[in-house]
Image (tube, rainbow, N blue to C red; front, top):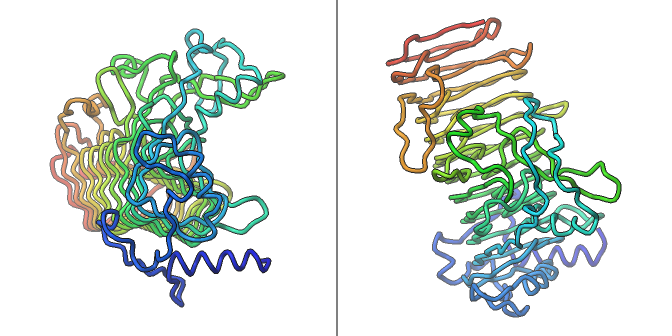
Length: 492
């Protein structure tokens, strides 16, 4: 590290936080600190108004906020509890310390409708990107499409050639705005943290509309999140694409409808094309990808949905995902996840997969499909003292090449739920619900699965407390099943 870089980092640490000998961060903020004075470890924080921000919820403060972020390595920034309108992406390319700010995204007008043509041909291949005979995008169109589809309200990633950024957020709210068609499945977010190390987020709230992610933690280390609240996120197809209705999606199959996505172009002179794809999760409220030593305490995720003509439905919108080769990830404390497509989805990837995942004390309700889903390349996963109710297919499912998965102390209620207004039609699934489903993926069967102290309560649609495939052979102790047709079933 150069002397000047070391000086900037020293100033940041001194003014932003107190670092203990063991690497922990001393946090003294109260839950209501947005309305009070800043805690002592934010002493010397500079007001965003110094950079020209107005913070009245009407003026566009993007340029002023960007100036403040460009100056972020000098110390903490104080939003004073005001509301700041943001257009486009705010980029923090160095350390960031921000408190008491409410950011509201104002997405640009959609350019999509003028380019979308007819109906996309159907495909069952989830990796296929089919030609829907839409109007080709020129290089001149690309900028408008990128601004609409790849917006990240607050994007923290260090400048190339520098070390990981340190991040401290306290009492920060980010609203993605009111356009559910904006964004894209893989490139947009309210808050995107990438290549950060030593991050502490406390009392962060995320809401609003658009595809992509509420919170993305990518390729980062040593991240602690306390009191995160993610609520009422909703996505919709691009304007001009086929709209969503319960009749359409029920008829085509809950995992089969086609939607358009923005993909790299194969045409000369263009950067992107609109392509039709078989729908996959267009929205994830919280995503942890390829990261290490991440801990979430007392997390609330309520309402990850898609906009249907009948109302907002928790369809193809996950609550919490852990993916790639993430390791040492803990979901602790009073975790509450409700009204989502899948409550928690852990899917390892790459050569090593994900490992050392702990979920302890979660409450998951109203999952359209699965409460907890564990699959692909996973090892050393513990789910402890967790309560699951209102899942459409299974309370928990374990599938594919996984090993060393332990479920202990789970309470699963598979009774049929009566959908309320705008809620998921859970009863639309076939009457084959199970408390825990252990399934294969291709020829791969889970190994080394331990189920202990599990209580499953069923209903009219519950076919089994536990169902597995030949060869899985889970170790089962203390299984209590009531109200399901079968206690334990093995099916080919």
